[in-house]
Amino acid sequence: MTFTIAFWHLIGFLTPALGLGVIAASLVRLLWRRATRPIGWLRLAAVSVLACLLAGLAAMVVTGRDGTMAGYAAMVMACAAAQWWMLRRH
Image (cartoon, rainbow, N blue to C red; front, side, top):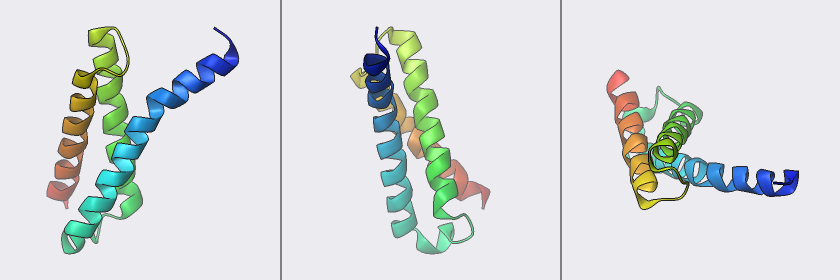
């Protein structure tokens, strides 16, 4: 595997987690403006992206491949749980 192929494979693995985390943080910030005021958008997004990355990595270990529907479902559930946890903490 060349460096270019490995680079684009890594980008392809990170992009769904980054996209889902940023979109989820933005929507949570928009819908629950008053509840998320003390938290901050960057912290919401960082926790969501980290949860999505960990869920994607766990799904890849369990299924043996990247990009499965089970992996994407795990990312959505982990992102929702992270947002819920952040809102309950504050």
